Amino acid sequence: MKILVINGPNLNMLGIREPDIYGRQTYSDLEAYIRAGAEKLGLEVEVFQSNHEGDLVDKIQWAYGRMDGIVINPAAYTHTSVAILDALKAVALPAAEVHLSDVNQREAFRHISYAGMACQVSFIGLGFEGYLRAMEYLKNVIQ
Ligand code: CA2
Image (cartoon, rainbow, N blue to C red; front, side):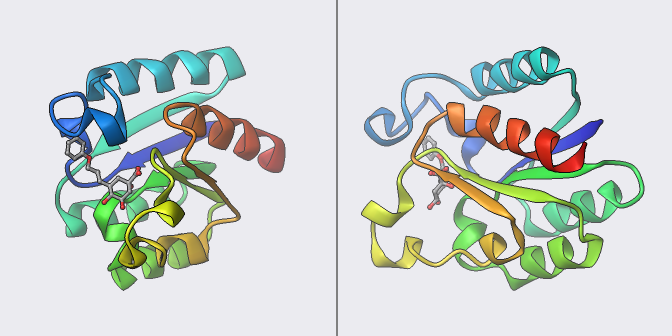
């Protein structure tokens, strides 16, 4: 079972700024956490991060016919990108949304999630654990 994990803009800055919101662990730590979690669950995982909306759309399209599910934290594009929503709808793979922080307790503009409208489930405010829960969820849905 193959899962694509996609992370959006600025998540590569994890651990460098805003530790009060996003913690002290780095993006490399997150990638290692995702890979270890996938191994434990017996999943094959591809991890991708980009700061560019079109690259995120391209990667979602790439998953069609190659991957069995998508975990996505579109970061700021969560709240703006109809293109990412449309790409997720187009490939129609089981998808889970993740946010490290509790977006519902933050600014009003973070309360809307376009990408979330094409996801079966959202794990919000659980930090890194959200990615593990999302992979677990997809494993159960797909098998
Ligand atoms: O909580 C999340 O996972 C977010 O997707 C993170 C996004 C934010 O725009 C969403 O509203 C919620 C921001 C990612 C930026 O991460 C940074 C990490 C360290 C320093 C600066 C930004």
